[in-house]
Image 1 (cartoon, rainbow, N blue to C red):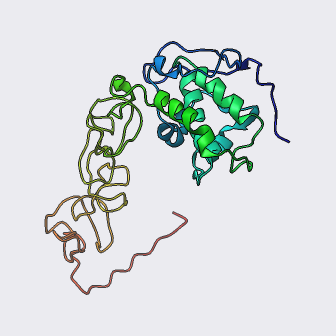
Image 2 (image 1 turned 180 degrees about the vertical axis):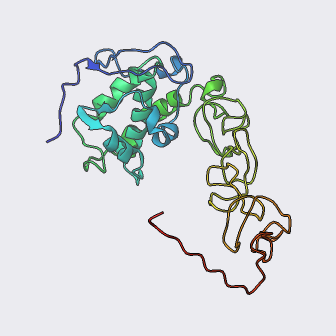
Length: 285
């Protein structure tokens, strides 16, 4: 069952910090029928934003519920309404502008007279696609135009409304936007993605001993970009393919320069290649 409220009641809105440098926040949105209905919207549009902005930037909404007429809607329902084609239904068109106007007021914009008049006209009708309410466009056109004018009243005078690099929103033409215009943090001062130092990118960055373009161990540069020991004859380690390794590459000492066992190297045993030497060990000794 949908929640109905008495229209003449003051509706409390939980307001987040004002967006885009707008005027001081309001903790309550006063919506009264008495004295409402005049075309007084045009005078208070400080930093207002259009319905298109609110439809595409739900994260910026200062409230998560709104009342249209006397019916309360959640944010998902309001977004569904904003995405609903007008299709000749004046109620939908008016609701688009009313949602934007109430979000602007909740963000700190002024004057709400025509908002109250729009609420009075909508009454208990439930806006599609949430419900199946309908108003003729001829009935809503004047209020729709007034609220549209309010939502667009900032024009070019509120520069902080315009998309810009560093505003924290990834706008058309931007690859990234991290809320600042500082280079070297992954998103450049012109909002293009910067190369971030990482092991395996083929560049030896600070803190790396090597970078061979991969993160595979065993190829001389480890998966953490530290230099790995490379097997070689003369390093003192008997690696695969070596018969011996005496820590040098000198012939005549029993291990050749290419790490194969030499014969006839012991001046005592006088071993010759092909000689068979049998050594007996007595475990009791």
